[in-house]
Image (tube, rainbow, N blue to C red; front, top):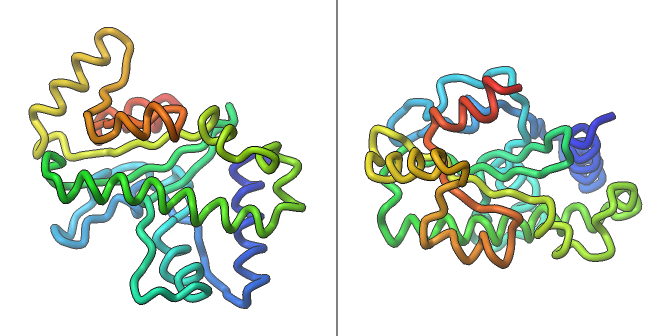
Length: 203
């Protein structure tokens, strides 16, 4: 069983333990769906399986710990064979506004809070994965947060991403610098086409 399957199984057991019956698995395409524009930011990745973090937040965690609002989470979570964990937030809009920047940061923190609260409750299963003793250290070494934005609606940022790629780096805008330096192993922005090339076509 690979790392993704292990984490998925642990979350599913948590859901069952708490009396819920919820399908948490989705795809890159489905989790990139934009209700406002009735379209998919990523019109690809139908076979790339991910965990839908919004479903967990709304249909499970938010019902166990009701707070009057749904906990903010990233859209998708997956684990690659190299052991790296990825949280992905899809934005089919301009990302250069203060309200959105704050929401992206909030989702990063609350996503970690929810996931590790779930995993810690199932710690007897989590011990095998080596991230119980110091989860903060595990996050800094293994967890990557990616904001995927519309290239068409973020022409300037798409240019910055291309410039970064030329020198084999990732584009880290100011509002992700704090997450990139102190929380995650990496936090950066990609357009949907960058994401396709790096995570779909290269698999």
